[in-house]
Length: 293
Image 1 (cartoon, rainbow, N blue to C red):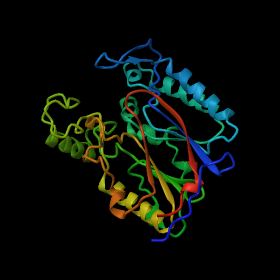
Image 2: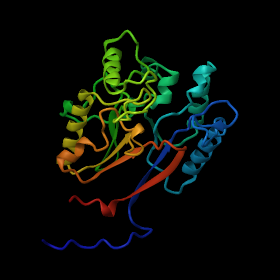
Image 3: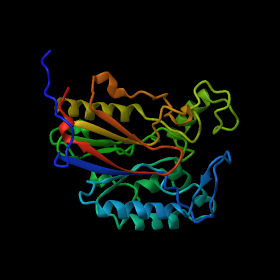
Image 4: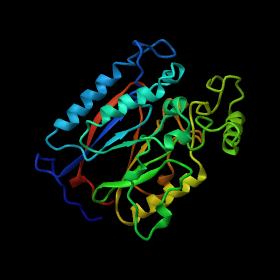
């Protein structure tokens, strides 16, 4: 095997591009409290200050990020209880308007605690208008039946947003066939009276606050990844939720390993929402390290 040249350590002059990531803002106009287990402090109204600080940081960077990924749970489910969902969402989205770069939104369970899927589809949390379309490849166009799309923020890098609640009982009309289908899947794996409880489950991801991917969406992802592989693109996948631990926050079908592994792809990163606290980050991608393997 031929030796590959060592690119050496990165220097300040190395070509980089960056993107911002923020997750679990979960804003509500409430006093601070604790999580369901009472083990962790929750900062409901304070979270808006963290968002403002993150935006100020991104706006002041000498090399600003190309975009920001907002990975879901933008407002807390408590807003629905106090009939403050629209007001809280508007407040957070108005804060995002001070950001100087595009923001791409994904949807988490707290979005569906506050709104129906139809509402979200017609709201400002739908950023599918920012998608890129691949000429002469209609198979890479997502269906309107799920919320997913892809875009290219930098040459040879393709970002894919997935809909982790494509299959879910949340936010769906209970009289619809899809709700009945999802409820059937859930009950087949979770016999508990309280469907949010993983107690006694061998597959604890099958709880009501989770969701999963339809075969239709996975087939579409297959097509996009195949195109990226053939064109030597690097792929970043943004998704909520997608963490191998704890198992209660895996997607329904038991997806702790992803379908792209079957393609032999080695240049895929997954950016997923943490479940413990708000996350703010700027990720820098060194282009000198992106040669195809």
